Length: 449
Image 1 (cartoon, rainbow, N blue to C red):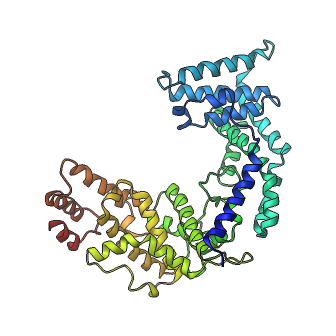
Image 2 (cartoon, one colour):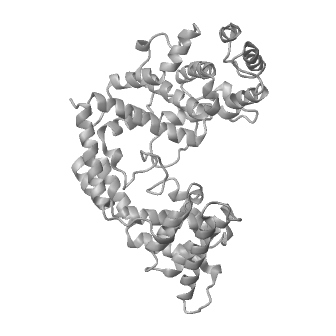
Image 3 (cartoon, rainbow, N blue to C red):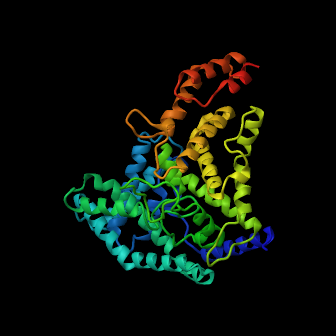
């Protein structure tokens, strides 16, 4: 049985290995290290300039293209150079670009072929560094579940981080320049490549856990508790069947969040974030109980219960306060799969509720109603859209049908003190006249007290 201290030591050792591997790694320098904070927050200019520095010796012309694109991005973001340090940065970057142009011995540069040159370099760069082969090799190591083998491969993957950082910069610049490219020529090839790499591979974006595709530079997916958590949310055969033609993005398997997105119409970015959130929550709970068997990691029932009670603690307290029955008769009456479904649903509601979070009664009633809807949907053989989230066009949108009416209510009573009985009556009155049926007499009576 692993203790918390054991897991902490394991984490520290992994962190030290990574630090030792990066101890002498080149950091942003020169113009790449002088990007103003106002530009860094909104763009990847610093990464593009760092990539230009990396490939300068290999292909000065491509480095020039990246620098000019970085300047164009800075100009579009702050054309009047009002931001702190922006004017100095632009001046310095323009000086660097002029130096790169001067090194071409006065030869005329045909910028009309920049996109073609960039595309050709991108292909050569991937081939030279065996990016596709290494990704496939890394996937095999990850699927093996062998910690020692995976860690040995990860040491080599440290060297690939710089390669993938450069690829990301090349892809971003290609995407920007391809808008003016020939749609029947190089533009078509670039768009096809962009569609492929945005959903798979190392270039797919993620927060902590790479779920859309395996990551060569992030070994977190190798840990048994993480693999067990990912397995816990996978779609089982007895769940409602999706309609024909239903597809998911990336290379991952269908999971519970795909059903929640299909049924209630949650926003895709929210779904991606909360998928990682539930996996990390379950994995952390499991690590406190002990690591599962690596060959076929399974999450302990106690870990699921811990996450269930912790996440839904606020909902349970509000139901007691409002004297309202919970959406389930007892914890024992819910199987582990439905517990994970409910926790995932709560995460998604909370992640998309934004400013409604300060109205806990609303969150309580929204989850209460949607949990009942979900429970009924799970009992059907086919996946059906939630009636509460169906829009006039026939699609589903949690934001449009549930959250937006609440925002309108908040605007309507923005000049009224919510904590007064009058302010709360206005909110309840609006709810009762809208399509939101989650606030009932119980809440109304409470607000009138």
